[in-house]
Each structure stands twice: as structure tokens, then as C-alpha cells.
Image 1 (cartoon, protein in one colour):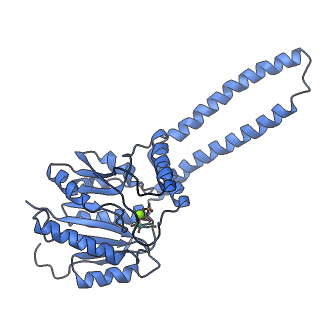
Image 2 (cartoon, rainbow, N blue to C red):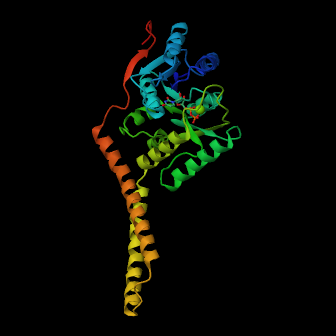
Image 3 (cartoon, protein in one colour):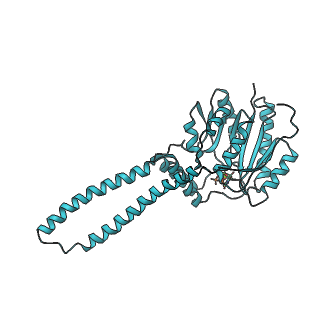
Amino acid sequence: MADTLYIVVPCYNEEAVLPETSRRLGDKLSALTAAGKITPESRVLFVNDGSKDKTWALIQELHEKDSRFLGANLSRNRGHQNALLAGLMTAKDRCDAAVSMDADLQDDIDAVDGMLERYAEGCDIVYGVRSSRKKDTFFKRFTAEAFYRMMDCMGAETVFNHADYRLMSRRALEGLAEFREVNLFLRGIVPMIGYNTGVVEYERGERFAGESKYPLKKMLAFALEGITSLSTRPIRMVTGLGFLIFLISILMLIYSIYRWATGATIIGWASVICSVWAIGGLILLSLGVIGEYVGKIYLETKARPRFLIQELLEDTDETDS
Ligand code: UDP
Ligand code: MG
């Protein structure tokens, strides 16, 4: 028995790729429907994340021409993760399973077939995992792999080399809806949902048009967001550091008393200056780490909406259900 699939695609300034992306996704839907793997009610849902270019106009046009393309227009730019969540939450009540992918189709869309197979075998979440990064530039590959390693040693568990290309069943989406956090880091939250999971490997291609919307600065912010919203290990590290420095200070105290007793106390300007700077730096760093968490708590207690949908383009003349 076939299920209804929604493909959720967040788009931010993607006018350069949308025509090609929609063509390929439309073909994919047709092929899967023809093969009886999904129902004809399956859709592609584009989420416009407050783009400054013609992205939304393009989505409207696509929807008019082909009702299999739906659109959700966010009230403003909220970032990739929030846009994705908006799309998944919109799809949740309309589909049996949803696949999320980027607008630039760097993720091989043929992996959807494999995801659907795993889903049919009973997996609620199927992760798309990159088998190799041959096509990425050295810089992107290096920074991205460093990202996963750093996340791991900071105590944030994620699936290695898995970004946001995944299939989630309706049940998993309902689970995701229960996670109310405002500081969103989906690839850390999704593994917490549990259920049966599977993995599909694919090769990641190059962006075929347009520019990356994740420059290094955004990527670093994203890594920090991931670590501080998933784990408190950095705070524990600060505590450990404080403890270590306390031990050193006891040794220093004993040493100072010894120097004083032997009458050689005036030398040591360099060591005093060094410790003033080092300790001052460490205190500021530690305060910063703690501040990150306090800031998170502040935002969470406000519980502001994670996204607002300004307009939703949906099937209007639906006779069934
Ligand atoms: N994106 C978004 N809002 C943003 C930034 C990015 O919805 O503020 C979308 C973007 O349109 C794309 C996806 O997130 O579909 C991933 O972005 P990109 O391909 O530029 O990232 P990269 O592949 O370079 O990491
Ligand atoms: Mg990309």
C-alpha cells in the first residue's frame, strides 16, 4: 500500500536553482507515483524563508502551473532550521512521511527511493548520510568534518556526515512537535526521538547554481548553537578548569611561602604578569561560556514562536478527505 510523501524544501534566495530543482523534484514524484511507491496526493512543499529575491514569486508560479507544488511563505527570514521546522510541521498533518532536503539538490534525490524502502521496512526515521565528500572543496570538507568531530567531543551527539536530508514518518514528526525548544538544532534533536531508524548512503554533489547560504561565519555560529543547545559539557569543562587552577594555586602558595622564607621574593615580575593575564583570560572565557547558556535560558523562557507562516499555497479544489 502506497503512502503520501511530502518533500520539504527550505529556500532562501534560491531563484537561481528553483526552476531546475522543481523540474527534477516533479519528475521524481511522477516516477515514484508511477512505480506505485507513493500516492498521487504526494507533494513538494517549498518554504520561502524571507527571501529577498524572486523566490516566492517563482514558488507561486510553480503552484499555479502544477498543483503538486505547494508553498509556505514565512513572515520573515528565520534561518534554515526554523524554515525546515515550519515545513515539517505543515507537512505533519497532511502526509504519511516527509523528506527534507536543500533547495540546491546537493543531496542526491535518488536516495529518496532507498529512504522509502527503509520506511516500508518499518523505519520511522531514515538518515541520509554522505558516503564521501569528494566533490566538496578541501576547505568545506575540512571545516565540515571538524564540525562533526568538535560536536562529538563537546558531548553533542549527532549522526556523522548527516545533514538535514532525512525521511521522517508521521509518527516521528509528531514526536518532533513535542520538542518545544526555541534554540533549534534539528540534527541533534531528531536522534532523541528514537523509534526504528535506518541509514541511506549517497554521494553529495556540488551546488549547481547560486551561492552557499552557509558561509564560514554562519557555520561557526551553527556549531556553537548545536553544542550549547545539546550538551552542558562546556560548563563542566569550565568547572574542571577552575578546579585545576585551584590546585595549581595551592602549589603556588606553598612555593611562595618557601621563597619568602628563603628571602628571595622580589624577582618574579614576569610570572605575576603572566598569571594575571592568563587567569583574567580564563575568567572571561568561562563567563562567556556560562553567558551562552544563560542567554539560551532567557530565550527559552520567552518561548517565542519559532516561525510564523504568512501565506500557505495549498490544493484548493480537493474533493477527497
Ligand atoms: N536556507 C534557509 N534559510 C537561511 C539559509 C539557508 O532556508 O537563512 C536554506 C537554503 O535555501 C538551502 C538550505 O538552507 O535550501 C541549505 O543552504 P546551502 O545549500 O546554502 O548550505 P550548504 O549546502 O552550503 O551548507
Ligand atoms: Mg547546499
